Length: 247
Image: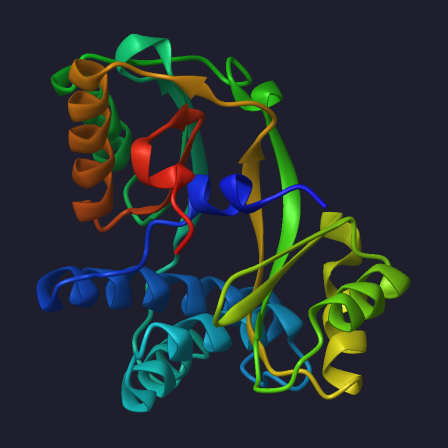
């Protein structure tokens, strides 16, 4: 099965400092609010909310924060409506970049995204200018328990309808079509597997090598987007050095 480089290219949430972790909690809080608005406050009847709660717990977000966000969105406390917006553009060296945001002020967010692109030597593009370079995939992270047989887990996932499979020392990574995400996740849970997180992500269909100077600029661009509260996820097709390392 294809592999680790696909996963490593898009994961950017490990090794956060305390300050950055607080920023991650803010972003997840917005995702919780949107999920509640879309399907209600009961995770048993709202798969999207259940997935975001799992994501929050995986990021060590306190349960009080999770419940507070759900209460706000369900109307028990004052709430803010967030709009989901996707921006596309080009980073340093012409690298394809997609920025997904949740915002309560579209003008503010658009200006901030444009500023970050410009400041880092890139440019904000038009809709669909780079999205064709990425595939949308459901991604399920499963806890790897002692005694798990990797081949057996892979076959279970494939039998349930998964498209691809990968692994690390601590986790299994299962890739599906977006429409198959809920079905595969439910089947894995029924098989007794512990789902760490299940969500839809964009994976580059191919990656591009960059030189050292371009790499520095790209990392700066990614860091600036990470620091913006409105930005939820950033995807790019640059092959950065750590993307080749097995973690």
